[in-house]
Amino acid sequence: MAVTMKHMALAITALGVISFLLGVVAENKKPPSGTAIPGKGVVICKYPSDPTVALGFLSVGFLVATSVVGYLSLFYPYKGKRVPNSALFQSTSFTIFFNVAVFTAGLAAALILWPTIQEHAHLSRTVHHDPDYQCPTAKTGLLGGGAFVSLDSALFWLVALMLADNAREDFFDETEKDVKGGLDHEVLQGSA
Image (cartoon, rainbow, N blue to C red):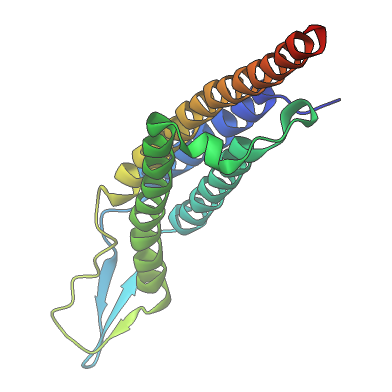
């Protein structure tokens, strides 16, 4: 069974929605703060068990998968017909949406990775020598914001795929006209 644009679009959508959902759940499961347990000259932070770090890294993993599938779907030779990249990038709309999709994927990765790594650092380093330490968690809202930008990135990959389809059709129409025009010209010259 040959891969079609519809299959690629469904894969991009599914991966993008999973990345979004994992990011939103990670944001909602993140505890507001840890419990500070004072000791002799130190504060030990006790955090409740939560899946924020794992969900954050999974969200980034699905975001990367979305971007890889999105990128590959644009240049895949559907029906065995390859289109030169220059033909795709002649379309201004395609070029803009391609660049926006790449930018939003990078922004989403940064917005999800930053609090995920920060939360992991908080959970790993629980002994602090500052007696006034409050045991914070990662910044609130970044995971959720990153999840929404991740979903936006998937949508931009879909729009770029749609514009790539239009550019492919235009390329093949022009190629067909050039071939037909060449044949008509040869027929006219042959009859003269």
